[in-house]
Amino acid sequence: MTNEDGIGRPAMLRERLGSVGGHMTRRRAAVYRFLRGAWPHPTAEEIYLGVKEELPRISLATVYKNLEALVNCGLAVKVPAGDGAARYDLRTDHHYHSRCLQCGTMIDLEPAAEEILRNMVKAPSGFEVSHYRVEVLGCCEECGKR
Amino acid sequence: MTNEDGIGRPAMLRERLGSVGGHMTRRRAAVYRFLRGAWPHPTAEEIYLGVKEELPRISLATVYKNLEALVNCGLAVKVPAGDGAARYDLRTDHHYHSRCLQCGTMIDLEPAAEEILRNMVKAPSGFEVSHYRVEVLGCCEECGKR
DNA sequence: ATTCTTGCAAAAGATTTGCAAACAA
DNA sequence: TTGTTTGCAAATCTTTTGCAAGAAT
Image (tube, rainbow over all chains, first blue to last red; front, side):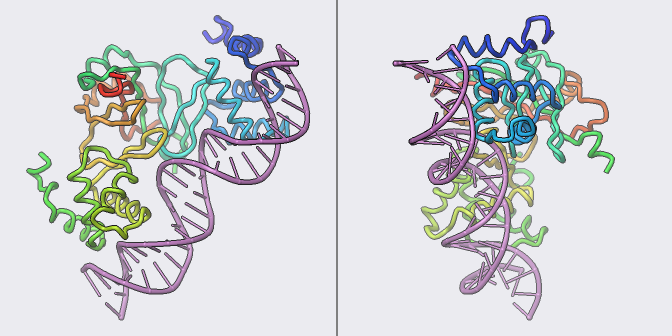
């Protein structure tokens, strides 16, 4: 699906940036490329270290600014981790994550039916629901072996 | 329920502390009392300001340490807010929250059936689920009026 | 030309920590 | 007396920001 609508195409970055008055730069492309090539849900720090191998002079602040740009033009999503560093996800469709309380690794889950949630979890009256956030906390397979 | 099992009793603090080798102090009692008397889900900063009216020389670090002690002996729960300050909750039974994206206010929700969640949201194989976290994000009634 | 982006250093906000003195058990 | 708690300041960690110089449109 990611490829059908063209979101996976490198050119997509340029298009999306253009539509919000953003410029296309070397670092921006590298951040996006890293995100596409790396493991899922890296932190800003991890992205910084990864991109740095290609562009040793890039700064962490620039990575943050570029991640914000990607989020703003709808190419990525920021996933706050509760405690510790947020993670960035190229999957922008609505879905949930499991998170290992030991190592922080996040794994995508298939989206649950919002319908069911809406019936199951009653929002207070007068509260306008924007979206639900579901997280499965626990211990991942790797950490479980210890 | 909170009163039936005695968790609401002031003496509970002393008992619980004793069971984990903790001491009973003036500040600790004040933090606990504030938590019981204040609005639900205050932040550490809010608790600090509140307790300060009674004990003007208390420090923010002490409030943090005492909140940690309360959490450790099972009298309170820390609710990370994703971004911004965590909030503290005397309700230690399993339940969910709604959170206003404007003002950060949290409201208790009745607990949803974990059963349903467990079926709805499939954890990755090898992942040992500790618990689910469900948050309803949106706009609260007050903020909606603006 | 204009507007956006970069790197750097500094600032920010939330929370933790080291330590000597004060306190509870 | 022994172990815990306190206040203070300093440190941590993650993220943001101000700014002058450099790049993209």
